Length: 491
Ligand SMILES: *Cc1c(COP(=O)(O)O)cnc(C)c1O
Image (tube, rainbow, N blue to C red; front, side, top):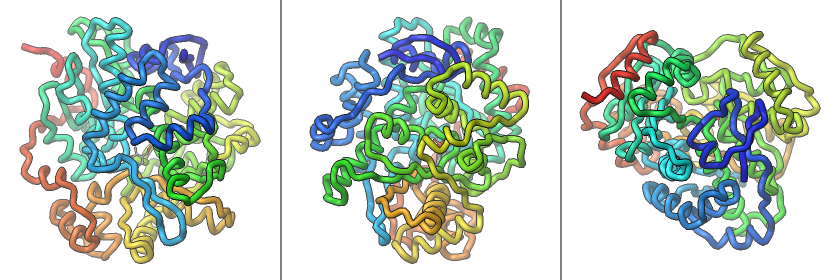
């Protein structure tokens, strides 16, 4: 199977798409056609465990990797999870939680970032890459830690993560600055996430930067969800959840299921859309946002407008205005018209807004809503009262939006809410939502949360308490490139 770009024609292998990260024309790689998922596939699939399911789905998109090698990578990746990688949990109202946070860093980013290093390493071999790989990450919190854990001590790679000094939770910061590994580098930047993101993007597209990095023996790659190797593993858990629902007798094969997904960069929910395109019986995809509700407006009005105030919320991983994966949806929505996508992306850059035909948006089958900070906190409280289940703030946004959706539509299709982080990643805020008591110290808050909810306290949180800070650097936003060069210069 070959991959083309959303902004121009090309044809590269999956391995090449994964090594490159982003197409030369600035577009994102997409498969030339979507493989299908038939009833016969499904019957084989349902008897498999999660790593085998992952290998089965990935092989349909990456036929330059064998099922055997994909199985080996998936086994290694998901052995780092605490129990089942993607368990479903039934709620009082008959809907389901798909918990994607049982990996090493307690957020759904682990579902792909434990696997991506194996894919990149193998893809480098398949494409005959000679340079070492430099993974450069700008993070608002969760991607950074998951990428560090995934790539630490991986041969021939070096990873550098930049996070906004004031823009991540205390727990997220501690997770990153205590990271061990011989090839990892982490620095806070004096600026916000957009500054970090812009600086990193400038390095990816700056020929002088690329040249200087090459002289040090490296070529760049991305661990963000623009990379196909990050997106493809996310398709698996939607199909797997559907199989589990059939297996447990909750639905019959062919019944439709809705998914509600807390969204930021639009990578998670796009994977659900791709599963649907493969033939999975999906009803509505409900896109949930916080007050940075640019996606809500897009789905309800057909207008993508980033010329608006940016809010810092308690769900920081969704504080984002430019959802890069929406580009991949535009590509499908327009009937795979790369000129259309290139034009819309240029409009966005120039005017901070673009519009598309609302009918075409509607035809994609999304619904969308947002929840503000008060509604999110109330939902966390009510949800715990009703289900005895503690939500992290991102998942609480999704639960709030789903409840609004139900009230507005009466849609009785079974729904899976995608749960993207452990509540222990945001213990102060979750504990406050449940009890009205704010404990500033994240470790004390985690213990209180444990005492209140009896939800198992992950060992990684305990460990963090005594881990030494190894990465104290704070760099100015103008000095990010210099920091990169310093990090990869071995004396
Ligand atoms: C990254 C993240 C999201 C948003 O996912 P996208 O793929 O960027 O839409 C939601 N919740 C949590 C906890 C995250 O880390």
